[in-house]
Length: 349
Figure 1 (cartoon, rainbow, N blue to C red):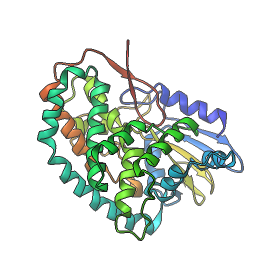
Figure 2: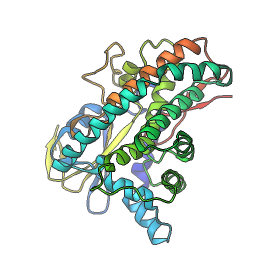
Figure 3: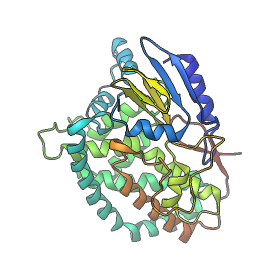
């Protein structure tokens, strides 16, 4: 990664608000090794790139993983996850595997809804110990994902929760060695010395889904729940997620030369596409219920989030628990904090 474009991306998203990033809807171009890097700060153009057949998803973590391996610090578990993950697959393989994972998420969603009464009781008993919106958001995300992991893999809930406690957000503009190492250790802990099943095993996709929840599902859920609470006049956590767009940007690589809105993209060019509106653009419609023509919160095109329905269910459960037990507010205030590609929060003093 080059310092100049990393700096520009950091400026845009380090200072994002609940609903916008910090730059106007411009496009920046940087020369790299034999190709260009395009920073797309306009979600309208981002949508066209994400739906174009000229672009594909790719594993932009790989140079960092290779560097660690060359220094005899291989991150086996992260490497295996990224090699298998649907996010970096394309074409018919991606489509067919996504259908399988979608069916599994539907089953997990039904299982989770059965836990709603017990979760209400769980948070009622602990309400005096939850002192901030970020604390509430982290706890409900932890327990709901823990229940899903435990059920999907038939492992003790305690192990699933300890795995989540060990994970860290790895979705940065650049390779973040300590975070990658923490996530690698979390996945290693999950399997307790065992090897995950290969693709010939009928349980393969359950493991792939679980790893995705751990690596990619946790942070956006926490951010969306916390954002709904922090704005104070929210009425629907699930619909709010379309407006807040907790995932700020995603990357794509150009497979073949293409012209989009007067911009030339050549094979090998890399685009970082903004999913959240720019500083000089109107925010996503807050009154849109359950879908939005303008929001890119759950992606668009072939790689639209496979866990979207499950995420909306968790957000709905979080809202119900919040309104029943925490609607009077919290002792400590939570504010936006920069943390890579995701909207994030921290407790203010």
